[in-house]
Image 1 (cartoon, rainbow, N blue to C red):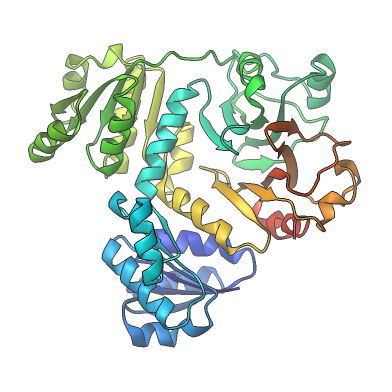
Image 2 (cartoon, rainbow, N blue to C red):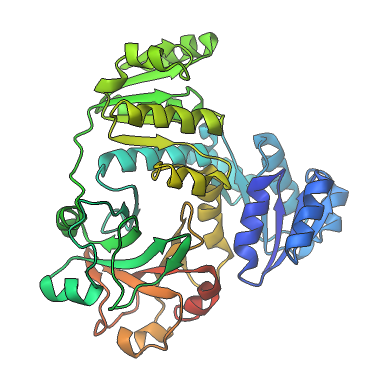
Length: 446
């Protein structure tokens, strides 16, 4: 596939690195020449310095041969114009990143399609939904749903309360023959492994588990993770994510939102009906304590500053808040955040990459989740009638190192994928895969 990515920094670069593993022909257009030189030194991606709204630049990038044009700069207008021009110049499909949710109404989506914009992604909107999901399934570090929750991916950090420490997967399966969940990966010492029967769970592991809805309570119990009844939430930062998150949460929880900008606070007070708006500097620990920090069940920091988000979340943990979620935009900070105990987090670059990557695949993929701090992805495939996975049970499929089938959704039913399970046409199959295995596992579903 010939792909052009218009970016202005890390988002475009990160997306290019993810999809370059699929052996596509990628050209990235970016105004920052020094950053492009750095990208060229690390990858085989073609680069072009310039403005993606320039017709001559798009033509130089061979947009008439592009199967996919993606524009992910930080300016909505540039993304929309880039996609409109690109489609008129011959690009087969276009995707624009937008921050203004007004564009995402069904009526406006229809208008955008007539202009040549085939799909739009709003990272702030998806980030807000992820925060809500983390607070709803409060026992897990991170949660991602497939097929409207018929299967879910749970990330759990294993501490001293975990009941399966030191036990192998085979032993756990013998002890619990009717489990409704399955471990698909373990992240340990900065390495991600696909676990086999003799692998053991160790203290400090990050365990990735595919579960059916009826398996969630047993899963959390075995992991020693009690559900936290979240009723009181403090949000730091009143930007797009903070605003959208508060609007969702204020219907079901008691919400306080803290922002340092007085004008923004006045605007938010007009837009949020049941949220207490506090104009203050969240970095002042005494101020937060005075506003009831120690009484909070959850704390969400989504300012534009990584350091502020991490620092305030650490203060919240010190005050006894059980669930803290920082927005961490610098991908290099994710490992550090996990090492200091900030396991649950939001990253807009990974959110954007997760949404867009599925458009670059030959097999039909409903959703992709690029995981925080782990060089791996979880994909939901739709099975075609003549694909390899329909010809034999799972245990007889050719072994692909660094990938594992976790679960299957068939109609209204969901199943944990065991060796004797036979996948059928129309099934939705959830697969955990490291980057080097994705192109191989995709062939199962072509």
